[in-house]
Length: 196
Length: 196
DNA sequence: CCTACCGATCGGTAGG
DNA sequence: CCTACCGATCGGTAGG
Image 1: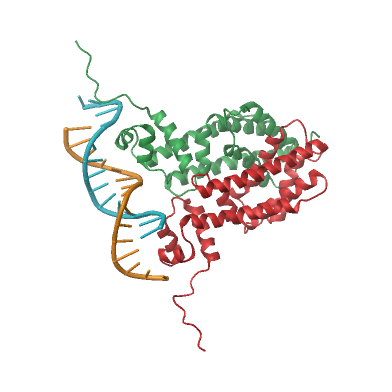
Image 2 (image 1 turned 30 degrees about the vertical axis):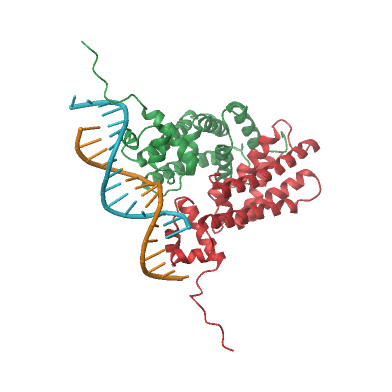
């Protein structure tokens, strides 16, 4: 038996398509990116993209789910022990996901809820934030986090700091993900002034 | 003598035009916002907007300059004294500008350098960051900020935290700008764990 | 000559 | 994976 004739060229996998799409979405913004621009960057026609996905929206959805699945897996890693240790595990895990899936998390953090897909992603983000706020509350209850700042504010500042890494961190920039996590945990937990 | 007949209606000032434009740019993204959308939101025709500004780009430029001028004024307020006091003044001043000019700073932080105007805004932001990094270095030199974290990382985390406020802070949400600044300064300078 | 607009339309490009 | 298209909308400008 002969091998079945290939129709069309091998071209791109869904994964490599997604990588390029996310890179362009970050560069130019999701809405400002046309499928023609995307096709040009991939070196294929616009219609070739529609072979892999049904819509521009589906590309966005795949990218956002990848970031969110990574972040939620972090919560499962922090199962037991003192709340403050679980909090540190969540912070370090978030830094790890953020650095390893940087473009996907970057895109997630830029989503503003302007469509059904974006709204669902925002809802999952809010659920993540809610769990972390509960964890900060547990830390305050066990006496391991200061009680004089509202736990809701504390957790917002905490993840504001972690999420801001997408604005400047580059994996090839000489700062390893582990060193970054160490510096961030030290600064956040013990403060700028120095060790207690 | 009769009063001269008014030709055209009083309509909008440049300031109110800018307020609305920035609100829509934040909602939908700058590039994704058409001048027709803007005109619809203002209740005037597209041509009426071009009476006040020459281009969509000029609207963006006016908005970004307003945010940047506010931030640079903060550096002038922190003129003398120990570096750590100047740093706290800069942080509190940044929080004040961020809350009082929230939409303009929010727009500034979303700019990615996709045009001449955006690139110039990014350059001014980098200059601001450079001054703050120098200030952190001075704090380390005088012994008021921990030396075991790189000053460049410290200042990035510092302003990552401050800038992340645009993601959730709302002036009408029950948390005053002063209380916010207090909580943020306490958390950043003394850490999550508690007072030294 | 000014300020503050309007109704209509230009040449090109969007996602599908 | 391509060619050949669609209904609609883009930023910007004309005369009055």
